[in-house]
Length: 145
Image (tube, rainbow, N blue to C red; front, side, top):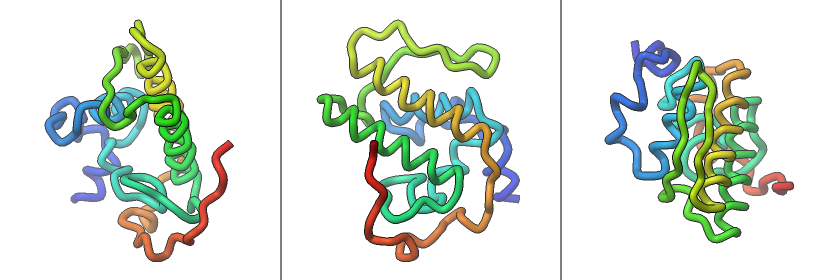
């Protein structure tokens, strides 16, 4: 059942790491470390989980992804490449340990991904937002703080 696969942790990011590009490998790994669901469960969810995003976030998961997009935008404004830059981190007992960072970008990006992973861990998953059509997402987005 593909839905059970998406919601389970059995589809490990580490076993399928070739799916992810460089810095996105860390993102998938942090989600897999903390969360009750596979990182794949968030690849096309709501208006913000996945590539791009606009409109009003649909639920708590979508808000987590929205804030993560804001965090990546701030990191990009600071000169980082969020989807390409890698950073050192460890997973211990479902906890993310960032570092040791060699530069500000590594620190910022690990914090962005760490915040997303913990945010998503406390959410309820709504199947109606999986593969949500982007045409149903409004044009205007909330402002990042």
